[in-house]
Image (cartoon, rainbow, N blue to C red):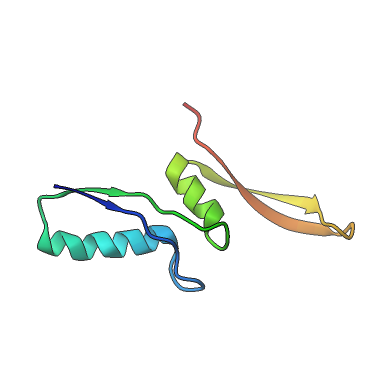
Length: 83
């Protein structure tokens, strides 16, 4: 049996990846021989960058950018893993 786990994050609590791990841990107690595929997802809000990085085996990138009012802002984004 193949089980696909595709959760979103729990705001200010768990990332989608952490939720997927917790769900898989519980399911493994009942279905220890199943094949598990975790696909963290996001709805465009909190956790979207992290979900996309996890899906592409990418890395988090940080940079100082210019905000809409001309001020320096710390920003984060992701880069996919290179093939």
